[in-house]
Image 1: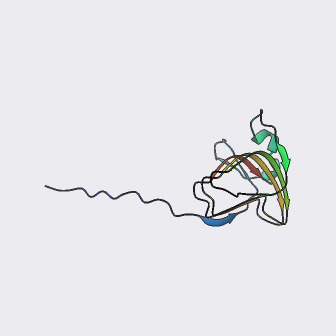
Image 2: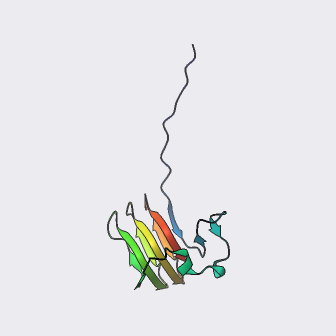
Image 3: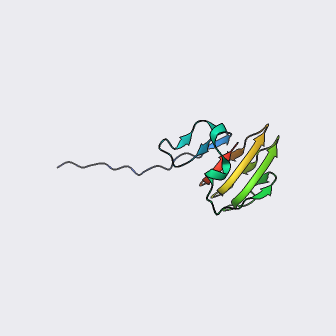
Length: 118
């Protein structure tokens, strides 16, 4: 008689990296638009979404949500998350210069939905 050995799935390692990119993830066939200059941020978000202008923001608690924002940042990350869990970034446009648009460090469970970084 033979026995099959099953191993438990191991959780993915935590990501500890600053993220800076100039692309928009959408639902097209490839999943990523490669030419950010051809993307209109207004087309990337739901039509019913009204954005509130904001300066840079920093997560201060686990489970915090950043939603419906147009963030302008110069020299600092538009959104900074360090050591916080289950952060949600949804319906956000980050316009940045001189630093990462979004910086994630030890941000287990972070979720990004309908986010444009330019």
